[in-house]
Structures are given as C-alpha cells and as structure tokens.
Amino acid sequence: MHVAALSLRDFRSYAELDLDLDPGVTVLVGANGQGKTNIVEAVLYLATLGSHRVATDGPLVREGCTQAHLAARLTQEARSLLVEVDVVTGGANRARVNRAPVRTTREVVGLLRTVLFAPEDLAVVKGDPGERRRFLDQLLVTRRPRLAGVRADYDRVLKQRTALLRSASQLRRQGSRDATAGLATLDVWDAHLARTGAELVASRVALLAALAPRVASSYADLAPGSRPVGMRYSSSTGQTLPEDLDLWEQALLTRLAEVRGDEIDRGQCLVGPHRDEVVMTLGDLPARGYASQGESWSLALALRLASFDLLAEETESPPVLMLDDVFAELDSRRRSHLAERVQEADQVLVTAAVADDVPASLTGMRYSVAGGQVSRDR
Image (cartoon, rainbow, N blue to C red):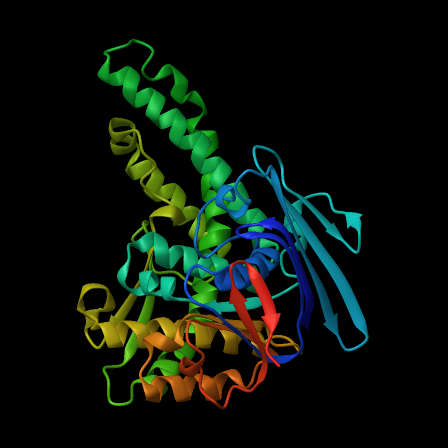
C-alpha cells in the first residue's frame, strides 16, 4: 500500500497543500525551515497518530488556527482508502475512513504502515531509557495496532495509581492520621497495573526477540569489522522471562508488594513497563555513553532498517519508508548502503536540504519545497 495523495489544511506551515505521490522514490528538496519535514511528519501522523518531533498535538496546528486537517488517499492494486484526521486544539481529535466517522481515532492506526528514519533517532541510542521504550512501543503498535489500546489503558492506570501514591506520601509527611486511609484501593490498582503491564511487557519481549537479530545483521552490514551489537530487555521486576502473560503479571505483583513502602515514601510508581529499559551493547559495553558518533548513527540506522525488514516480512505490502534529512549525516559508504536497501520498499519519501546529498541511484519524482510551497521539478 502506498500514499497516492496527501492533503493538508492548517497543518504546521501549510495553510493548504495537495500533493500527488507515486510508488517508488519521491525526493523533497528544500532549505531548512521550508516545510519539507512537515510532509513526512504528516504521513507519520496519519499512520501512528504521533509525531517524531513533538510529544503533543498542539504544535501541529498552524499558528492562529483551531484545528488542522490531514488526509491521505491510500492505494494497493485495485483497493483505495481515504484516511482523514482532524487535530483539534483544546478538544478531541476526529477521524474518518472513506468519509465515515470512526468511533475513536485509534481505529485508523495500522491502516497505513510507515518506517521513518530521522536525525532524532540518535536519541534512541544516546538518550535516556524513555527514548528506547518509545521506539519499541511505536514499532509495537505499527506491528500490532490493537496494542495502542493496551498502552492507553496502562497509561491511565499508571496515572491513577501514581496520584494515589502521591496523595498518601503528602499526608504521611504532614503526619496526618489519614495517611493510609486512601490506600485501601491500592491492591485494586496493583492488579490493574500488573494485568495491563504484563501484556505490554510480554509484547515488548516478543518484539525484541524478533528485532534483535535483524538489528545485529543490519549493523554488521553498515559497519563491517565493528563490535557486534546486542539487545536485551531489562525489566523493573528484575526478572528475565519469556512472552508469558501470567508469568509477567505475577512478577509485577510480587515486585509491587516488595516496594510498596518505598513507593508511598516517594509518591512514585517504581515498578512497571514505564521503568523498563532496552539495553543496547557494542561488544561488552553499553552503546549509550560508549558508542562513537559514527557508531551511533550506524546503530540508529540499523534499528530502522531492521524495523522495515520485520514489517515487510509480515505482510504482502512493505511499509512506506521515509528518510528525513539523513543522507547529509552519512558518509559515502553508508549513503550507498542505505540507497541500496531502500529499493526494496514500494514507496520511499526522502527529504534533503541539498539535492546532491541524495544518491543518484534514487531516481523518481522530485519536488522543490520553499516558503510552504511545493512544486514538481520538470
């Protein structure tokens, strides 16, 4: 499946944009700040309801406007699908499929599958554990869209349980006799957190088992002779378990009981998938803090190439591959390798500040982007 047409209204810098796209390679060339990244961000948002640049939807709406409209016409052989999302400032977002409203916006997740490699991916290697959890969960939802609901349920439980712990902690510090009165429901919230958390963790463990060997292989291709890459899941329970919901649920319940006193003292939830880590190593050393700039770029690229391979193997239609301002950051060998690999995709969207940064082998449609205007090169 590929994006045949993209329409934006009041999205980022675009008051109005209607863009026709073909299968194969499309290159968007423009100086920084002209709006080329906004285009791939819009495609990503229609696929995942998330951005690779911001954590909230507010910045996606053009300044001075109350909502943004995004639409993509998706085609695969004789099948055509129109996906639309309205991003509403200060209100609930809305979504439609073939003009018909859907119950929740989450229903559009998975209709379009994408893999995006962008400079921000360096944070997955060099940043804090939250960056690696976010990477894994985004791929998780792309691979199994229903897990978007599991993530949302876990976040809701975590928020409620944390509020309860914070309140109890404040009362305890004040010496109140009611310090433990509000904890009567903590066992219930423990059970909810363990149940939803177990499904999330078990799914992450299964995904990592499938992804890790592909990352190692992609990295070895990009950096021959370098130290081998390793990946493992580190749980806040201290356990290393297989993809088994019951085992993970019990491990979470056990650990929650062990740290309850500390949690009340600190007013924080100390156990759960929100505290877990994906440990990446180069040889015997953690990649975070020890990988060079070149190694970090290669590992970040290997993560995305492995993601693409995994998704492409599981469906007849490979995901749309998007490369946002990355060729300028790569040496000639890595550029050539990346250009060779992306030929496997049905559709590739590339952005670049300088046309010469894009390898000549990536032939296809070319657009110039300037001042929020997109024009096809002749």
